[in-house]
Length: 136
Image (cartoon, rainbow, N blue to C red; front, top):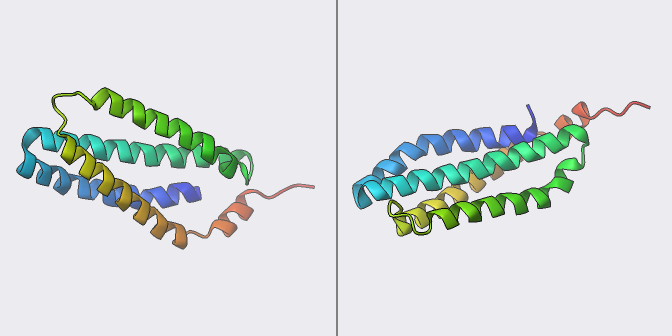
């Protein structure tokens, strides 16, 4: 298992557990459109995190430094995809904008905090050097 997957696994697990109560709270406060908005916002954030981990892990299989090389192009592509999703949802009648924005912001923050927590617990050098043994 790659270090990226280790980081995302913890964040995705807790985010999925929190998704039920978050969507339920949004439904209780803002109704059906609030619940839909919260669910879509959480899905976009988790899909972005999964795409980032997948791109980095895939690049890392080719070379130990490739994950760093792919990070900026991957970010640009993922942000373009998120902007496209937001453009499609901009005028959707089933989206409650305040709920979507709040859920999106909280979810991004939570995922980043959980990934940072996992990052400090992942033995990066040991994993990288063990998998990337160079043959003379």
